[in-house]
Image 1: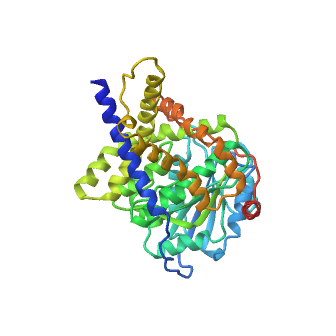
Image 2: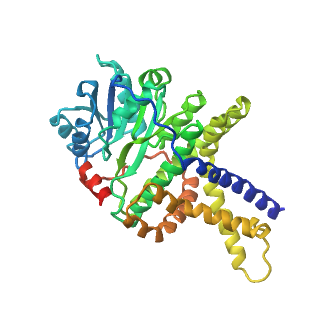
Image 3: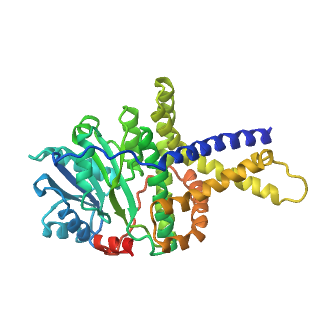
Length: 411
């Protein structure tokens, strides 16, 4: 009985994995260039910051020099429960410093919700709202791309997320590889197929009318994923702009990375529990591939959880002396699953080739499997602690400017 259940679980996991592998085939090409428009849309740029005095100045400098009419955008730094000089630095650089003090409701989701309410009270109105983290950097043409997409009908847009410190450590390199893979072989296929893309927490653009209509309402540990679900439920598919690039600072150490990823997975369990069944059933009822696909994405955290447990059980069974008591799908079609396994792994070096990653990052592919396997214990621990809603801050201390990032890309 147990063996049959285990086999059925493996079949479901294989179908989900095969489906994603199939989608990557649609990331090998890019659609024709979108229609270009003169600057028409005005933007409120929100920068979420909690004790970011070390890095916020570099981002403000970056944003003040975007290649877009200066009178058509304003910068607002959300100084959320700050105890350092974030607000003072922001004001001294000529941008709005909006201070929020609410230690009981901590986290970016609550900070954004508060800031939007404050924004709607202001005398000036904006066509769209853009959101960044304080440690980010942005390509100068970012707002041009957002303007084009808004004029072309998009209501929610996710930019291309890159890493500004990919070669600082084996951990930052692993994040960089994952980002390049997700941009090219996860996000772009869905953009090409007209499915819903997934918000990544920063580099996001929202039509003001939509935000006012449905409210923010995303205050979980993964507010980006939660807002994605809310949009797709309403038939609004977030789009992906491959050309609008945002650079994110990644933690240097395994400990900091594990803490950050634990928060992500705890929040992912919460969102999956609340949104999977309603969205999946609605997708079946309406015949909406986008809704079904997004629901399956929400379920991925359980795929990682169950997949890790099943794989470990099979490995342990294989190492036991005597006859194996558990059946593996690999036993039924070893050649097929060997090919699938190889294809699943080489997606990552393929992404490096397509995205023209530097040779230094290739060296870190040796340790990349360790990073991927570390998701297993993190996900298992997150499952048992998913009711923990405590937001944790990732500290950023390195001052990296856009010209530094671009010079490293050229070299």
